[in-house]
Length: 302
Image (tube, rainbow, N blue to C red; front, side, top):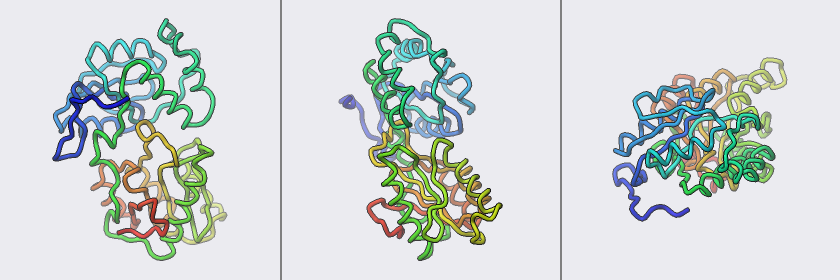
């Protein structure tokens, strides 16, 4: 759905400012609050929707409501009552169980779309959610539109830079993610000495990193730490408005605990909230973090 003609871009931040409040559907983690605070600084009103069993950050500074995960009909009514046309989803969500869906005429009309959310991988779910919202007259917006300052820049973040071997591993990791994309597998891999030792699937990046630490502990990874690179990037064709990859402080801490050498992320396609804190944590842990252009398969930062 095209943006409203009255939408405008803030020249200071590059963020898109709409004509009404931005509705933030808040999942688990700190990201919903980080985004809400950043958007609020641009002067745009926020209306937060806390989801039972999911939202765990403090959004009490903003007008808000709390709904069950399956209350699609009530959600539409609440958003309309508060004048929200633009909707941003942030944080992690689980798939609702069929028994949790509140049925009314609106959900009956959307039954075929709702049923499609139960089948397929993350991409299928995300595309289905976008279709449901936009068919009801809302506009799904992504972090790149409203909080571009939180998107990873190109180049090194912190003091350390990847060496030649690490750059080769980064290039391999980016290539692997590009090949995995059509299969809707994951957004991240861990590469060590030209070998992919871990691939992200349904468990998520942090759990994949923890699994890599276990592999090192039990001797399946013989190389001494620090070694190995976490590479995280957008899957080809990924819907970034609802499913933008994220790297944060927990990722840095997990990578350090797993004995990795560094983290490479796709510049412009991965969220890096609290970038100053992330860079400082990486420096303290002796890790490099670098934003890489996916078109540059050498893994070489600017």
